[in-house]
Image 1 (cartoon, rainbow, N blue to C red):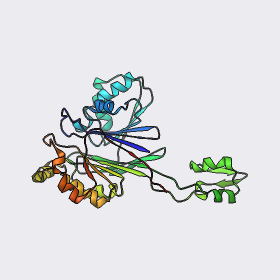
Image 2 (spheres, rainbow, N blue to C red; image 1 turned 30 degrees about the horizontal axis):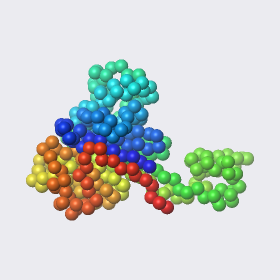
Image 3 (cartoon, helix red, strand yellow; image 1 turned 180 degrees about the horizontal axis):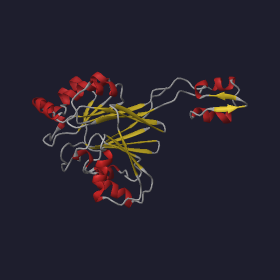
Image 4 (tube, one colour; image 1 turned 90 degrees about the vertical axis):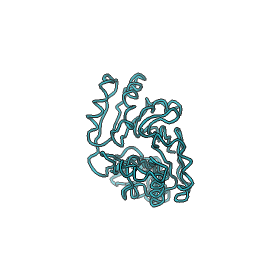
Length: 303
């Protein structure tokens, strides 16, 4: 199961009822945070989750509303006596930016490992899942992210038995390990069925619509996309500042054939996003004007 919580849905500045943008996901004991705007810690507390076990923080870009909450978060993690390394992923300049912010959080009991994205599209693999970054179109270098949970095929008992592999060794093959028994090498593909559909969450904010977004979000179980402006007459403003309108996000969701769309990263002037959702749902019915704390537990499809 992949747990997802949209901690903050605001853009530019926090409001009393809306923290700045951030997303947290949990899978198989791993905790992933994407962006860390002002108020992220409070939103996390409201959800009942802790920052201490965060394993990976990804940054879309380095505008303040996406990273200004980082120093305080690091201090909280340090005060919780965390000692495990913390991995950060982000555009070029990540190391310099993080070090600058750490002027007010200089002493931490855990190391930070910064990994800067070098390509327009780059994949980072972990145990059982991967994070895919893809370049989008903002007025600074900016990336969207996929969190993809892989799902292996079913173990084929009859194949293992036909090969004469004893039951105590089955688990290793199921986990993707290669075995050598009595001089014979057995690989997982010899006993596993075709990979089954996994889970995919796409997070994309601060960008104009691009073909790359459609391609990378294709088939996502959940597409979280910025909707800076709900008003139709704000399209020219969205173009000028390289943001998106609700309708443009809905059009991307439709083209990418995602299962569900959550809008986020609202302009501070957008007080009631729901007022503009009727026209959005005419384009893409499974659309939601997300609020802070919106959560979902994504489970694998039944076989």
